[in-house]
Amino acid sequence: PRKIIIDTDPGQDDAVAIMLALASPEVEVLGVVAVAGNVPLALTTRNALIVCELSGKPETRVFAGCDRPMLRPLVTAEAVHGVTGLDGPVLPEPTMALQTQHGVDFIIETLRREPSQTVTLCALGPLTNIATALQRAPDIIPRIQQIVLMGGAYFELGNVTPVAEFNIYVDPQAADIVFKSGISIVVMPLDVTHKALTSPQRIAAFRDLKTEPGRLVAAWTDFFERFDKQKYGSEGAPLHDPCVIAWLIRPELFQGRVINVEIETQSDLTLGMTVADWWRVTNRPANALFINALDADGFYALLTERIGRL
Ligand code: BDR
Ligand code: CA
Image (cartoon, rainbow, N blue to C red; front, side):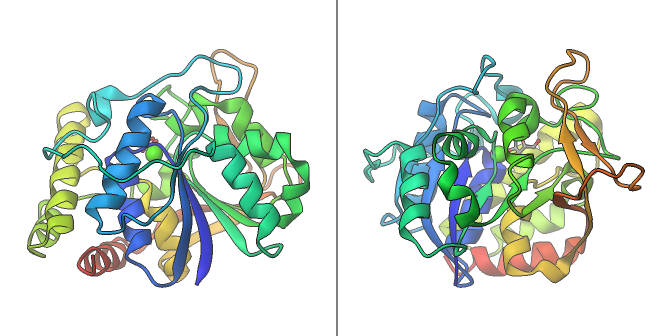
């Protein structure tokens, strides 16, 4: 299996992504690191613990990382995820223990210990922990196999400002460090996640698993869908973060282009914009595989089958 570290700010869609990873033999989750994002760090950490526990994997190592972006004050998204970050179903308090090591130290130590180019970082939230690790320990940069991240947008533009996607907007400096690092990067922007929409049938399929994880995923996606329907009048809700894990397991479900992506860090108006050279109109070197299409039915079939294994 491919060894991964999940860096995350759960978040209902993060929760589904974590469950997908924990259910899938193609990946081995070395650890789950929480970051401040959708809600403050204390809550994303708690939520990461709850998700591992409710997945029946209390042995998963969960760490707390950075509690704020590198330079800017934290922006959160309670309007989308609810005050707990995991609103929807009633959840118990976690009983499994949080690791005492700081999440950034865990990332650094793991990359130094494991054979070079065998660990992939899966980023489902702002890139604060990962960029901090790269900055503090540049020796790990050539050792990272790949960074697969949910963030950014091109044709679909912004969901938090007119041009910026939430994960990049929250910590644009961190994103800039990651995109300039030279590490192999795969990006799941809104262009693809807006094609991974929930529907009543897809949510019912989770509920019909008749298991506790299936019921939870149905309740979380239901909560998400109601928000998007009310706010945007859209058909379903994008299940962003599971795209990252699904790509590792079934890359043939996705399509994209290898292009140059730069992050706007200066302008107030366009802060956090992912300037993606989709049409290759510059000579800037390609630094990312930018995904823009997926087989949504295949994606939901995979998700349902895997959640059913938990
Ligand atoms: C991203 O922002 C968060 O609200 C979601 O969990 C996802 O990671 C989508 O813009
Ligand atoms: Ca997230």
